[in-house]
Length: 225
Image 1 (spheres, helix red, strand yellow):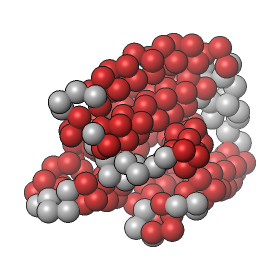
Image 2: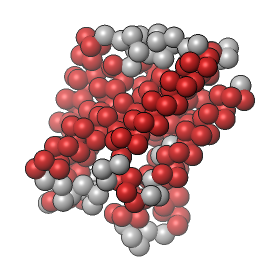
Image 3: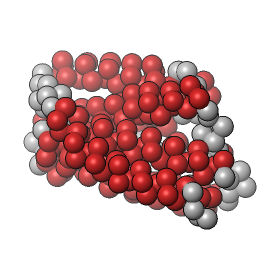
């Protein structure tokens, strides 16, 4: 149990610390996240003899069908909101100025690889397998892994609020952080359910990448309005 707890803390600390390093938000984002994920996953799986199945690495591409449908519905709603009078609510200064190849890379590589693949392997793959391996029920393992997933978002949320609202009070920042941790913890539980339902990480990765990319695209469109 202590190893699972310690590794969870290491993973949470990694993201909350490295997000404070400016170069991480540029070209270093994808390779650093994938390297960290690969090293931690391979080392832990080897040491504890975790199988590919336990890590969720045996899913089928056909599992992505429901995820793609959900992304399409979500995307339609997000883009409609971006073109409405409420667009300012989702405008994001971090992506507003992205255009052409830079925007395409952000939506099609940075988010899918640096965010979705990284986070699904770490939380729905490695940590879920690790908590399950010590005898936790599926729900308890999902809860511990999802709580770590929520805490992983503290620093990114703080930075996002400061960029989009430099005058935000400390109360507003911490309220946003608390909301983000709660929301992503719940989202983590949903993604874990999808991983268990489909037998692998393909569906969660596609859903995660699609929702994040559509959110970013909506943020770009809303910001330009």
